[in-house]
Length: 70
Image 1 (cartoon, rainbow, N blue to C red):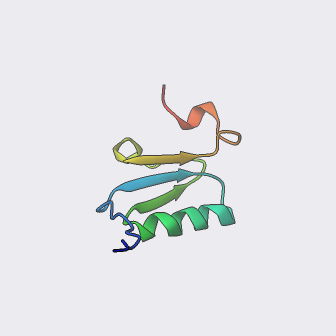
Image 2 (tube, rainbow, N blue to C red; image 1 turned 30 degrees about the horizontal axis):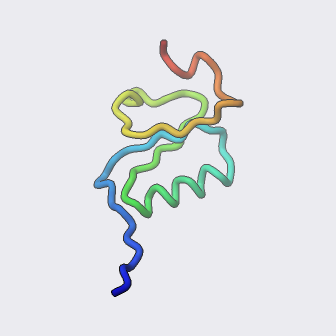
């Protein structure tokens, strides 16, 4: 018996993508949407509800200290 590949559904989880506009951001957002994650791209300012996100994707080289509260 062969098992098929199953894509998990993360049931409406939210992921922030903190990156300047780029084709890679669109690709990440497409893949996240395919598994049920609501992808929100934001640059350079974070949305007010950023702390409620379930996942965070960010560009470590282009980010700056003011983007993330300490």
